[in-house]
Image (tube, rainbow, N blue to C red; front, side, top):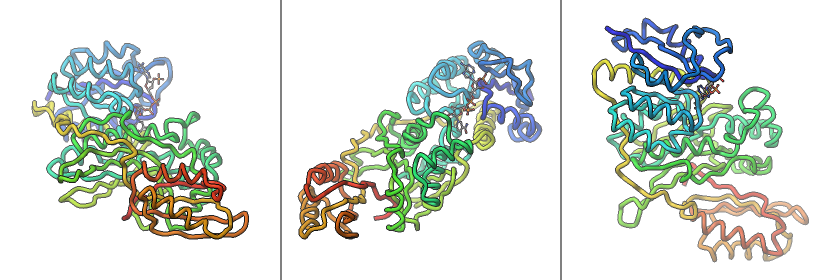
Length: 432
Ligand SMILES: NC(=O)c1ccc[n+]([C@@H]2O[C@H](COP(=O)([O-])OP(=O)(O)OC[C@H]3O[C@@H](n4cnc5c(N)ncnc54)[C@H](OP(=O)(O)O)[C@@H]3O)[C@@H](O)[C@H]2O)c1
């Protein structure tokens, strides 16, 4: 059968691994697809750079020319960022090419434009590698679970922050120290903002929520808090509760009183989860995502969330799927965001909270503090009083309450004479 010709946009950490796998698995891929896969060209910024295993004759700086070439059937985009990636993918689909992308930033910011272009042109748009690297997650949501009703997606989708929090938990390291170590070991970039401030996880949460709930969600809709404010004291507090702090991406349906969904909640923040929860045992830079569906129940997906070869594995999986569709002459599934559920403001999110207060050691403080929680409708599940004198502390764990009610409580507590400092406020997830 006539070979299917593949254009690769970008040849960095991921792209070089895609080239390697295409070459190493050439025969198997051809057998699985039913046609040989041939690399037609590789677009890069710096063509003079030596790239092991890449034929220099395939390199070009003319990415636009490459994606619109008549002898190209499939385009893989591993450049990253919004432009020129978006224009290149749109140009490719316009000329009938199917596309594969690992670009979470683009999918989360402007997936709608790409999905519309795919629908119009009949092209495939696959992007498994954009969330949680090697872990098959988008296809299960897009295909395996499409007959079910996904209620909730709860996951660790950023390896850098998981590595840092894991170091803080295991060695009692502070955030800065753990970040430095992660940078030395190559788990964190020189500019770690996208990871530690939660932007990367928020983009992935948007992609997951959109697929899980068939509703449009962009990165801007996601409530985002990073881990830069997580202190050694927060982590120690979690330990005392037999819990661990993880940066979680949470996407869930929010039911209305009438049994109809009022909307969805999509958020990223560091939270405590009990050590007995499966996500608590996700160590180092690994990723894991917990999916709760009405009929399927709870499912857990675990593995390497990044890295050249793991990410390239997900891309090759997409490539085989897209190539098979080309051979069969039928496109794959398209994204349908028919549900149009609103993304609810963070204040309406309901969860549990851990609050640690440094308080004056005198009688009546506990009662005054408890009264303020009650006044805002936040019910206390457990309270512990520790220390004495200048070291007196109250540790409070609440039942489920709205974020707005908890924030109002904490704001007022900060003004109390008897509260010397609000030492820690952290959400508690993963159990009732
Ligand atoms: N790295 C991971 O573990 C991982 C995991 C999951 C998803 N992803 C996603 O995969 C994508 C690529 O990541 P990466 O780590 O491989 O990035 P990278 O190492 O920085 O590689 C980017 C590549 O794009 C090329 N490039 C940049 N601007 C270009 C332009 N205007 N025209 C043509 N080529 C251009 C660069 O060319 P030069 O080589 O000439 O500079 C480089 O080869 C991103 O969307 C990222 O979010 C990465």
